Image (tube, rainbow, N blue to C red; front, top):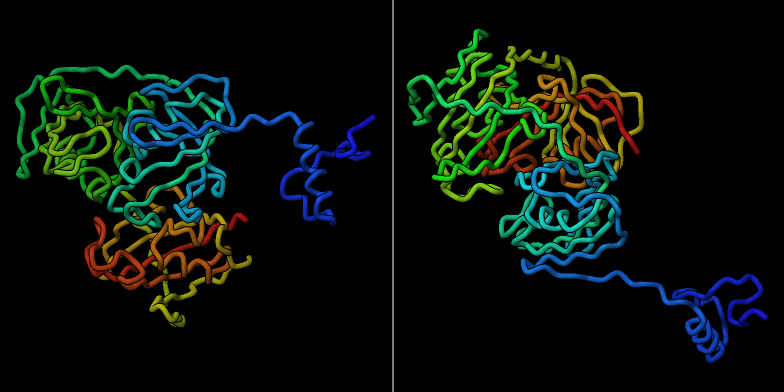
Length: 410
């Protein structure tokens, strides 16, 4: 004979479903009987580390546990203390990938991911000193405790390209800014210049007695690619590389004032002078994107002060908050100087609309455009980088973007 409380269907009564039944005491007895007969489910255990990280393993994986130097692929959702989601790789359908111990993520993540096995799902409660501290970042306010739900999809050791540690054979030269460099191998390619697309391998060391390695593109089997002179790398490298050619191998000594300064970054302590062994693989001139022709077209203005010009009307629906947008863009300062362009990188930019992943003017503007649209955006400082600016954008700058909304993913 089946227990009365489970009924003829065998369905157990669970908390939150009691409102279906009428009749006061009967409900209480009914639920109590089921609670006695049901096998209690194992509850996740909340654990705290000495640093203050609280983590809960929601699903135990059976794969390897990551170590320093391993690459990991992770899906995640990040929430503020009030439960607001500020970022999610699930929304982008694109897991994040990073190297353990490289300082590429906040320290709470470094510590938490190292506690998991491949295949695990967990939650992290990360105090401010293990997150974004007293400065905050983007949508994250200062001194904010963060909650992340993470899924460790993959752990692997990157196929390592053997880096050659060759001592400099030529006298060191010093640039006007105070950076020193010395060739270990002379190349025969073109001279590097600003506004070139550069590809190089590097290994970085802290310039101290033990010369601790803090990062290497060889470990990731992935060269660093950037546009020289656009402040995409530390100032010391931007300066030194203009003295090298394609094919050169060199050692570069960068004083801390031209590296990460008095703040440091990740595994690099404050006021650390750095050493880089670099190998210049390739360089090519950056193609200048053509600016949109807006002559004869209306300039529309919103209540916030955003101005925009529709250059080509799209064919799709307008995106909504939470949609993933794929965008090509070129950004200019008010004097016409280009400061960033996805076209020059041959790589469209992806972001989630309305989640504060981009400047406020972008979130507002793209909600007004249809899929397939081309437009010019004129963004005042209050909707851009404000009175502080952000390298290479100066303070109080009005920004101009020529944008194309390639795709809306819902």
